[in-house]
Image 1 (cartoon, helix red, strand yellow):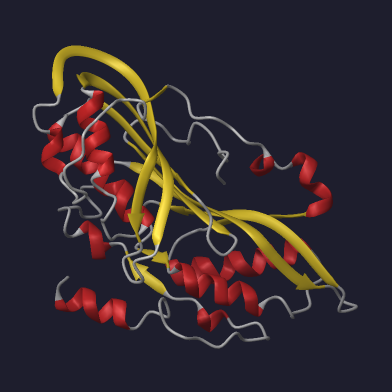
Image 2: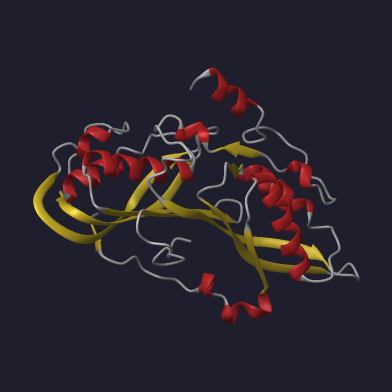
Length: 283
């Protein structure tokens, strides 16, 4: 990690003892520049090889109505891939906690406030939707789905180490051109700052020379000790597959398990606009 990266990281609330405020405090939110990782991948705003978004599901929203009666809700927000910043997750949790004792006229007012604060922080148009729990029958985020395609976790591989190794993808393709959907539940990386484990399912859809499933699974397992944020990992996987496997079309989508009532699900593709499925069984 270079000096500028360390400067950014040391100022984050992540990994530090913090005070939980009981009044609405948008100043708690902290932004992290996407360039922190994209510069290392050789990506600039004008050369991004993908489009997509980061889907954040929120399961612990609460606020007070005009009579100071607590209300609860769930919902989500999406951050476009083109935003110059991402929101630091602990700062978001502290911010949402500050809303717990704040009065709002409706759940729509809460959503509007969060949208305004996140859009200002991230310099992008952030979509926010919240739902009271009485509406849960109509919320697709409560529906559990299964990934499309073939799960590669049953392949009997031997693992010699758990260090990130993109070279595992070298010479992993054959000359047979196919369209294929693959996924693995063995995606695991660590928080860049705290080292806490991030568990997830990673889905890959591509058109191009067939990728050897065994090599791909070994590559996914090599993230087990890797320290990066969710969004960074997905963009790294995308860039590695493009570099070593050279598919004509590629989608990489990860669904991570929640921590502190929030799960983060980055989606990147060079040919699709929307992720193919929503909540999985571990979410």
